Length: 182
Image (cartoon, rainbow, N blue to C red; front, side):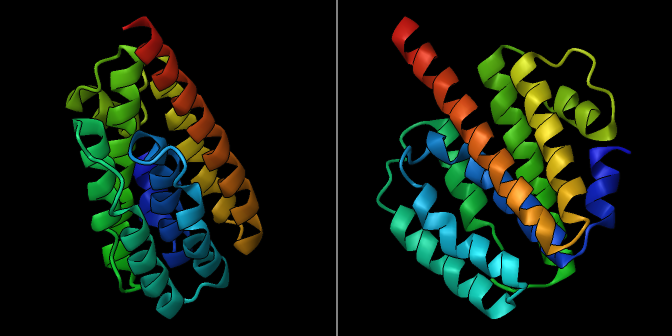
């Protein structure tokens, strides 16, 4: 099943988790130590609490507002956070999760040399990963795994968080390595 199909089938909790997981994995590009700011948002997703979701998002936004967004990658991550819907409603969450998916794949594609071209990102999301570099392909696998895990209910959130932590470490290492060689 393609990533787009999985997003279309996801419920509110799955959509919130999918978008949040993409944001969490890309957060090192904005705030290398910012993962703690998302912890209350993850807790709201675990409870399926729409009221706490909006409040936790607002608080995370304030905490991460001081992070410098002086390059395009950081700006895109900030936009992912800013675009998160305060309302716990499937249509808004679906649009956000889909946007986060595309942004995360684009960012990963840029860092692995695949270029993050919109055509390649959309092909990957549609189920054709031909031409994807290892970092882009890894992000695509993580997005699939998150959506498949959370489809089984709240118990899948632990796996989603593990995948996000792992993906954040991978991206942080790639960015660090690139900075040392530049």
